[in-house]
Image (cartoon, one colour):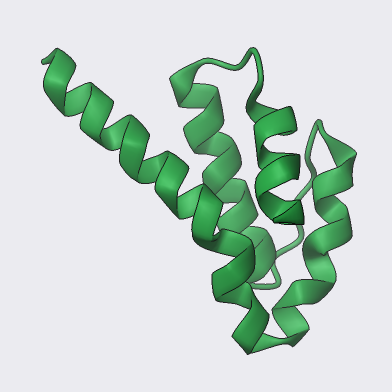
Length: 77
């Protein structure tokens, strides 16, 4: 839930493309890649990648965001 809460705060006021970029960065963070966010609180979740069972929990909302944006784009074409 904290990842989802942080995500909603981080993407508020962002364009769909900016939100997708943040989702990609978050995915990288979960893979252990060095990533910097404008919304620094997300970096607090960097330790999650040490616990593989928790990665799915942390990325669930981000994956839903990505899928929702992809579907919105398909319907607008």
